[in-house]
Length: 180
Image (cartoon, rainbow, N blue to C red):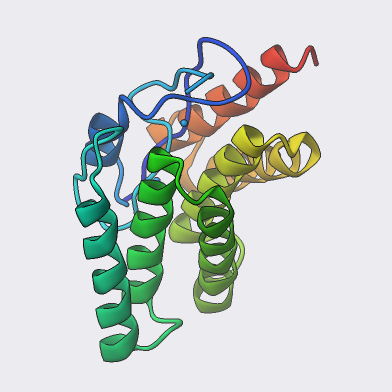
């Protein structure tokens, strides 16, 4: 399962304060822009809290990623879920945005290889990377991925599905805050 993405208050980044509720509503789908309870989608549905992660939490997420890679393979679904969780924690902590971006890109490429471009998990990864790119200031990359998430989720899940609506909200929010 996956989660919707953002509801904002103001540009250009989102707060992680609602991360726990977002992760509960999605399965493993940051502060200047305030997200709604459904911004990122956690891949594993681990229910990690938001904004209050400790270095031990990040260390545990790293261990879980290493274990998943060793047990199931680097490109396995389990490793991709663990990589998503680690990336979201890193971005929440704002300790290693660059590493978070690399992980989210790797996750998207992995899901595309495993499932294709329009699978639910792939579209969740698209959404998560779009949010990251938006927060990082890559407007062109974020816009492309927000649009892809909307189109793919609408086609796969239907126009009234909560994940589709969340992606649509993220796109609309992005356009609003960027005067488009």
